[in-house]
Amino acid sequence: MSIQISGAFAKNISSAKLRLDVHQTITALAKAAIEISHLCARGPLDTDFGSLAGSANSDGDAQKSLDVRTDEIITSALKGTPTAYYASEEQEGIVTLDRDKPLAVASDPLDGSSNIDTNVSIGTIFSIFKARQTAEASFMRAGREQLVGGFFVYGPQTSLVITAGNGTELYVLDREEGVFKLAIAKMHIPKDAHEYAINASNFQSWHTPIRTYIEDCQLGAFGPLQRKQNMRWIGSLVADANRILMRGGIFLYPEDTRQGYENGRLRLLYEASPIAFIIEQAGGAATNGQSRILDIELNTLHERVPLVFGSVYPVSQVKTYYQNQVDS
Ligand code: F6P
Ligand code: MN
Image (cartoon, rainbow, N blue to C red; front, top):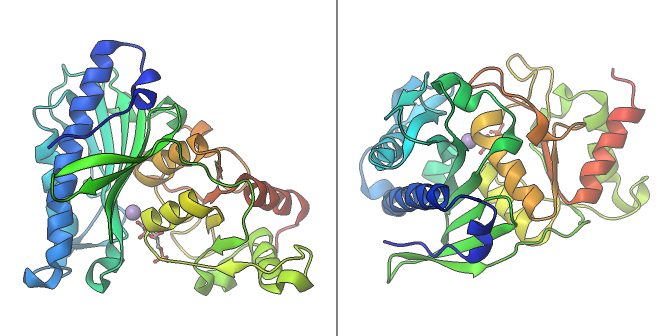
């Protein structure tokens, strides 16, 4: 299996040795993704597909068998690559693979896992950093220090969206050849678009800025936004992000008043940071509603963050709602 990495991808990583290390690690992740995509494609033909593993991950989410299986696949794929440390959403602590190696990898091995048994796109999100002196220090930093951010989508196409800080690229798996091929060399999110994505069932729990913004979206041409807005919510972050990369729009998973949702639902390290890197590199924006995601320092491995990303204009509009609205 090989993955074509274009010049644009490699250019931003200055040292040839580091470029090789990153390439080797991404190739291993791409192999793992092909295996995971086969599992997803077989679906209910494998008896324990989508069943609960009977455990919860470190965030208290119910783990499905496939969550656990994908985490094992990625852990074993990273062994033998230049990866010193692996941090997974599905594991409590950091896994030390070989502390002498130069890289640290974080991953949400199976994003959107509530969609596993519904035949809806799910994916694997990952982030690569230069390893530091200790396992902890390798991840407790701001997302802007990522070498690479990426995600695989297991959907009608198995694809890879990736950035190394010099634009965002889309690769699609050619199943006949078993190769990820470059499909879009420079993804570009339109500056403005009329589509929003949010789990509207949480309306009663939102704070005033988000509640007002979504009310205004719903008012469409009759409200202050003065135009019809369309709504989409897939429930798999990777799939919603992929749509926004293709045609723009805004995604919101804000903080709310439910217990455990004080900082939203999504994890800074495994989800928000790599998505923010990819989105910014495609010309979009990613904030916690007010501040840039990539400037937020990680303090605890599994911490959550409110996440608002997509086309630059609506993301900046949401910021003005935070600035102008007094909370209830
Ligand atoms: O991984 C968390 C996740 O499944 C995301 O993929 C998705 O965007 C979100 O949670 C869906 O959350 P909810 O079930 O609250 O709509
Ligand atoms: Mn996830």
